[in-house]
Amino acid sequence: MAASDAGRHGAPGLVDHTNLEQVIQGYHGPSMTATFLGDFARYLQDVAKVPTASSIRSYCMDVANLCASLHFPRPIFPPLLQRALDRETAAHPVSRAKHPATPAFVAAFVHDGSIPRVLRVAAALLWFSTLRGSEILATSPTTVKPFSLRRQDVSFAPDSSYLRLSFRKGKPFAKNEPSVRIIVRPDGGQPHTFDPVDMVLAYLRDTQAFDDGEPLLRHADGALATKKHLLDAIKKKARALGLNDADYGVHSLRSGGVTTMRAHNVTDADIRAQGGWLSEAGDAPYRRANVQQARRAQQALAVSRSDRLGASPAGVDMVTASTPLLPPAAALLAFSHPFAVT
Image (tube, rainbow, N blue to C red; front, side):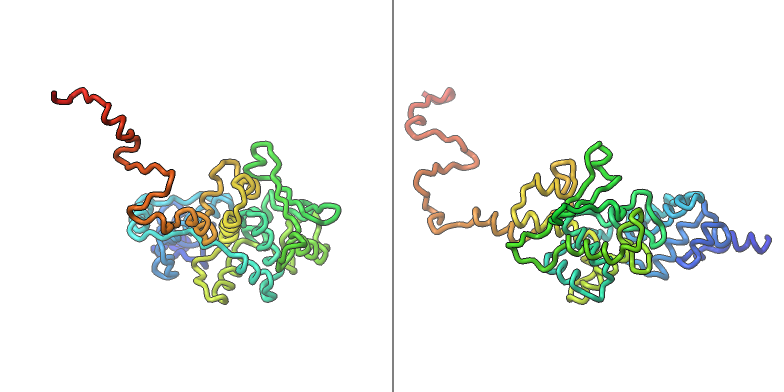
């Protein structure tokens, strides 16, 4: 076998994060259609020590999608590997739901001067707009997505009381509805730690060297702000606050926004409009338990002293589950049972 063929069809276990590009282009490692993803999964488990089967599956799918985006053959996901990952996931289920960010967490993040400014602006936008991170952030520092949110997609009210984000892609847009988020300046009569409208105005003013047709969120050196950048910053801040960073991610802002709105008794209709959900239960995956909701609900469930055993509040007819419509005694006496013995 020629030297090039030996490198092309090398022994298993040669695929790792350092040579993915060479393997995809066919210069190194196993065949793209044979053991490529299997070898990469082995590297993730044995060398990178990725802790869960679901994460290994996600990384493998990311690599497969990368191949397709680069116009290379999409590698086969071996059925044997899929079944093994399914068994491992079923045996050791891991919740992927992140804890909701609280207003205190968001304030601490936004006011942390060690965090790049663009990421603090991104967090403020996500918190007040209930957007997904992927809707305003890039996937790569150098790759501009076709429908990226651009600087020119941000507009302000004449009195700067609110700003409008106009999207060219999204579920509402696909149904010929405006795909828009409105972020309002906090009420002057209410205490607040930061103003998202002012943050965006200042950010746009200080980055005006960038063209209006370019993506909105960029670092000072021009690199695009990515979801991974924000994720890393959120986890770092969680650790600094003494929290478990595994419980927090970019989606914590979205679920935290929904949870906080529900805690403050915002109507379902307003929550749906705020988050751009088209169905009545669209925000259901983002709801989290919170003390305010529990307090409101349990005020109705509280057992008073008059509810003690043997006491019946005046004017309340007590019924049992087995006889929910038990007639009064007089009606029972007048009732002639068809099977009564005479």
